[in-house]
Amino acid sequence: MKYDLIIAGGGTSGVAAAYIASKLGIKTLLVEKSDVLGGAITQGLVVPVMKLNAENINTDFYTDLIAFAKKYNAQHTFIDDNNGWFNPELLKIVFDDMLKSVKCDVLFSSQINECSLSFTENIFHTEINHKLLSIYVDANYIIDATSNGEIFKILNCDFQNTDENTQAATLRFMLSGINMKVFSDWLSNYDKDRQITPIEANDNSQIYLSTACTWDKKWALTPIFKAAVKEGVLDIDDTAYFQTFSVASMPDTLAINAPQILLGDDESISDPFVYSRALKQGRERIFRLAKFIKLYFKGCENSYISHISDTLGIRESYRIKGKYTFTVDDILNPKKFDNIAFASDYPIDIHSNKKSESMLNKVQSTYYVPIDCLISESINNLYGVGRIISADFQAQAAIRTQMNCFSMGEAAAKDIKSKLC
Image (cartoon, rainbow, N blue to C red; front, side):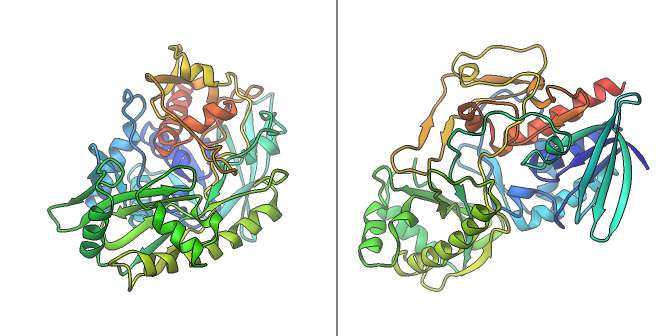
């Protein structure tokens, strides 16, 4: 079996690459280890998508995503015209529909076990394992969208220095059964800063809102969290990071960007034992946070945990070595490149494992990331997209967001199309 392109991983960057490649006429196979597409945005409950005010470079996929999501009532526009307020459950259907519309082949419950490159033919030979069945597929190009660089590992490619401190992970969840009118009235009176706590009722009578509280600065909600710690409802580490968002077409539900999972100095989330402990710790914290919300937030007395993320939200792990390594200096002193993958103005956003060491440094202007950050340093027809992008630690903390990941996948697909022509 032969394809022009195999994409390993159907998360945010992988599904974008698969859709755009197939739309451009590239014969594409998307290989996804789980049973749904979307990765962080569906299984990880990472909604909403953070808005970028940068130039619209390689945003065709996102434009089409909005149009498809509207068909399923899975999208809302809120806060400075951010159209990225999605319903993560409905997006599972949306992504299926998008790839069906462009006739992209998808293998669920599958992953690439073996991969070799024939240098004489310049073709990848892969073994794809679907449960007990092995499938052998050849391809001219591979995009590694596995989030941990699994194909780069199989092919013995080099990675960036991983000795630096990694960012804290998060296990998200959702609470349903909330009286949103009571909650929003209470919240609007408790925190009158509409920049921190925006609230809106739309034409469908669904209330949209957002608020936040972290342990390293003072917020309106800080006294409530401190009281809960004093009364033994929360542990101090439960208060490290807390954000909550409304969800499109879920009028009684809040998506919670918490709990943040803190690691020790000698721990790495790439260690399978550390990862497994983090999941268990996260679910313990979710139970405490849900109880806290029921006790302390008005309108949430009858709330219940309706969703727990299927996967840990990891912000940084492996980073590939590409033909160019994007650096923090490229953000602070932007320059134009010959072949731009995407433009961004997202800040340097580091979630530290230690109190008072997190960073959110806004940038002064739009910066540009070249396509060479997505291409392997040693293998010309191997691409890496998503959080594994070739970048230093601080630069990756700015460009790892979902909007950028969508554009990475799209940029890789378009670059491959130009080479196939």
